[in-house]
Structure formats: structure tokens, C-alpha cells
Length: 246
Image (spheres, rainbow, N blue to C red):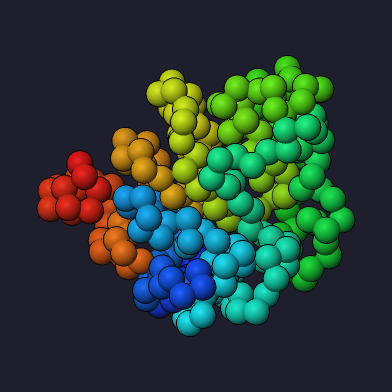
């Protein structure tokens, strides 16, 4: 893959749930070492895009390229082994497992695998993740279900980092969190980006998105209706009003 090529390229994809036509020719890119943020109202297709990229709801038409390789027909676990990790909406931590056990899930044989496309770097291990998230270090033996919402979100991000991904898909990481915790999560995302990871962020919190994004996309009815830089979209009053309700 050439240096100038995007890490992730989504080209004119069309994704359905049964007969429901959700993504209707959507295209976007995520470049190495950047955070691309996807904004939009509820029901516009944001989570469907995440699921399409992760291989959970593959598109019927169009192409998704990750590190220059097509993901068409590839099982979700193989896509993960290529260097892609998911921080799902609602955290989806394993509440009856401890913090340590949740973090170690990403190091299982199935998760790590020996797929040829797997990222070779190993920046993140248990000690590194606990250093990044000292709140988790203090609760390493607790059941994950006993953590606060913010701590559970940190655990979900830490679990993703344990896979040493090139690209992290984050779906509404600020959902249900107090403003002070949202600020902490934003700082964590910037730190992760500065350490070389790319992030595709789905978010409804406009302030958070503007703080962390390198590129901004706006989705409406399954299509991208705007693409620009954070300082540019702030001047697009019609886009903010009509598509984001701001």
C-alpha cells in the first residue's frame, strides 16, 4: 500500500437489513494516524457503516478496502485479525468477567490468529493498557459489571487496544457519560491517535467530534452529505441545522 493511500477506503457501498435499504451509496476514507468522525442524526446509518466495515453486516454492493485489500466475503474475525478493532455502541463488555479477563479476550487464539495481514507491532499488552488507564489498574480483579459507565468505556477501549490494531472503529463512545468523562474519553482518543492508531469515530456529541477529528463526514439517509475539516463545518450553518439539528 502506497503511503498516500488511505488505510480504509469505503467505496459506494449499499447495505441492507433484510429489505430495509440503509446505506445508499456511501463513500469515505480514513488515513493513517488520523481520526475521521461520522456525524448524523439517529437512524441515518452510522452504526450500519461500522457493522459493514467490521464484516458483521456486509454490503451487497460496493467495495471496502483495508490496507489496500478488499474485505469482500471475509469473515468478521479475519477482518479483525488484519488489524481492525471495534469499540461497540453500549460498550458490550463481559459483565461477569473481571477487568483482567475482559482485557485478555483480545489475546485469545481466535482473536489474535496467524492471519497474514495481522499487524506485526505489539505496542499494547496488559501492562501498557493499565498504564494508559490507571482507573482499570485499580479495579483489575473486579467484575466488569460493577464498573461505572466511564470505566466500562475505558475497558472497551483498552480491550480493543490489546489487539494492537491499525484502525479502531468507535461507535458512540460518549453515549450516556457525564461531560467530565466525555472530556477524558476525548483525551484518550487523541492519545491513541498520537501513538499511531487511526480511528473511525461515530458520534453525536458535536463538541467532542470537533475536538478530536481530523476529517468530518456527515451522513443523512444512508449517504454522505458533507465532508470537510472541523473548522470548515462550523461555518456550514445549513448543514448543521438541517442534518445535525445544531
